[in-house]
Figure 1 (cartoon, rainbow, N blue to C red):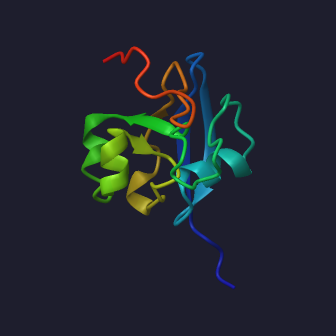
Figure 2 (cartoon, rainbow, N blue to C red):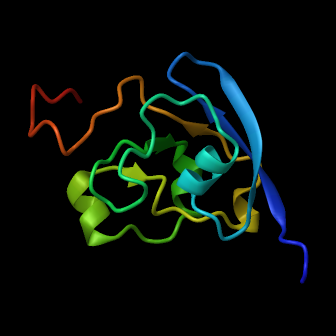
Length: 115
């Protein structure tokens, strides 16, 4: 079997620490966090079933252009979810920021939205 191509992914966690890891092209960013056991509290609580939004990630503007069009369901959540974004070679070394607060969409419906 051919060796999967890996790309470097620096995650900035909610404490501002950069956790640099590698992920396989085709894996979701949620997979990368889980497989590398990154220290990101509460991330991916629903295990990628689009139920919780705890894998919400923030990207630099130029990265949005490289990402596939977001799904309607994601659009409804107004954010990009790590369980829906799969690594491509062009994403090598893109910095991914984790929001300071992780909101689980399953627990709160619009409790004091901050923008």
